[in-house]
Amino acid sequence: MSGPAGQPEIGVWGCGRMGSALARALAVAGQPVVVATGRPGRAATTLAGVPGCRATDPDSMLRQATMVLLALPFPVALHALRGPAGRIGAGRTLVDMTNPALGAGQPQNAVLGTGDTLPPSMSGGELIAHAASGWRVAKAFNTLSADALTHWPADGGPVCVPVASDHPSGRREVFELVLRLGLHPVDAGGIASSREMEAMAVLFARISSRHRLRGQIGIHIGRSDRVATVGEVPCPVSR
Ligand SMILES: NC(=O)c1ccc[n+]([C@@H]2O[C@H](COP(=O)([O-])OP(=O)(O)OC[C@H]3O[C@@H](n4cnc5c(N)ncnc54)[C@H](OP(=O)(O)O)[C@@H]3O)[C@@H](O)[C@H]2O)c1
Image (cartoon, rainbow, N blue to C red; front, side):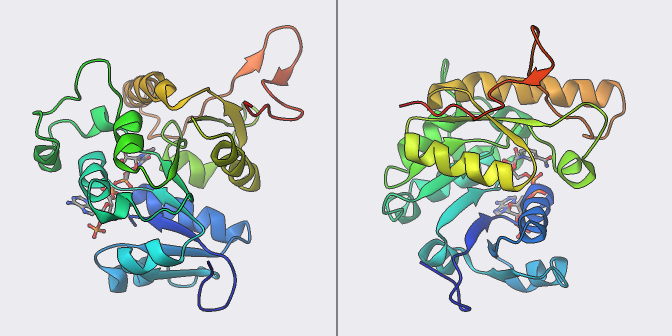
């Protein structure tokens, strides 16, 4: 699958704070990107001047992208993936970065049909993986804020990006993408780890708000016995 210029393109679904920040970061890293929203004209304006980045509608993006990064509010994403979009992956990788709890109370949550909360002992990542049965779903980037993506590097060493998936090849693909962004992937296990990753994002948001950091913080997971990042050489991929 490739875009109009014949180059493989990664799809970013959503052009809000996170979608546009990721699209820019990928384009800067030399990765062609196709961004999808219901308002491609507006997205094209937002991303004007970013080389290697174009905007289209979700159906076109889903047909063309080699891999898709899901940057929609969680209930909107779940609703979309419970329809035909969830079945047309043909084994491609879908990266879920949603944080259901951070959107609690927003009107889109009516889509979930369970009030403002997830079912007990269930994460958004697991629900997305269940709905998107045609895709190799990985949870990643939900612990990284759009502001940190834009303003890094900071003083604390590489930013770690936990990646959770039940699909080793999907996890490997996300690892490569994270590395291309200058970030550090960490194997967080299967998709069930989405529960802890989503809780971690809530803690991050609380710390950010309490200390007025405006999202400009990131995780660094280091080892105590030497100054190194977990999984530094090479990042382990589950078999
Ligand atoms: N912001 C962060 O720092 C951050 C960090 C990690 C993870 N995330 C996750 O990434 C996802 C996107 O977050 P964001 O901050 O980028 O959100 P946002 O700025 O509000 O952008 C949401 C995007 O979803 C689209 N959308 C489609 N249907 C929608 C609907 N019914 N209601 C609202 N938006 C709709 C919007 O399209 P239009 O442009 O057409 O309105 C927009 O492109 C969320 O799941 C969030 O939890 C965010």
